[in-house]
Image 1 (tube, helix red, strand yellow):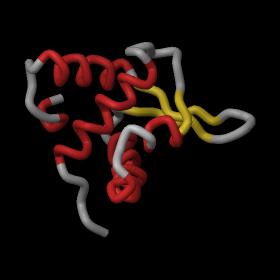
Image 2 (image 1 turned 90 degrees about the vertical axis):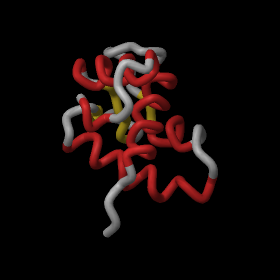
Image 3 (image 1 turned 135 degrees about the vertical axis):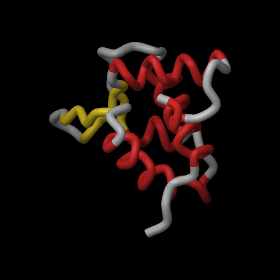
Amino acid sequence: MAKCSIETLNAILVAIYDATNGSLSAHVPLEAVLRRFPGHLRGDVRRCIKELIKRGLLTLHPTRGSTTYQLTQRGLECSTKLIKGEISSVEEC
C-alpha cells in the first residue's frame, strides 16, 4: 500500500473543513468529501482519510445510516493554519 502524499492529506483536511464550515460539531459523510475531488483521486482520498484519523486530525462519527467524519480540535487548528498559509503541510501540526 502506497503512502499518502502530503498534498493529498492537506487537500482532504481543507475539504472536510469546507464541508463542515469549520464546525467541530458538524460531521459529513464520505460522499460529501469525495465529491470535492476528481474521480481518479477518490481511491487515494478514501485511503488517506484513515491516515488523518491515525494522526488525530479527524474522528469517525458513526450514525444510523453510515459512518461520517468530523474534525478534531487539533484538525480544526491545523486546517485553519493551512488555509491562512501559516504552515505548509499537515506534517507541521
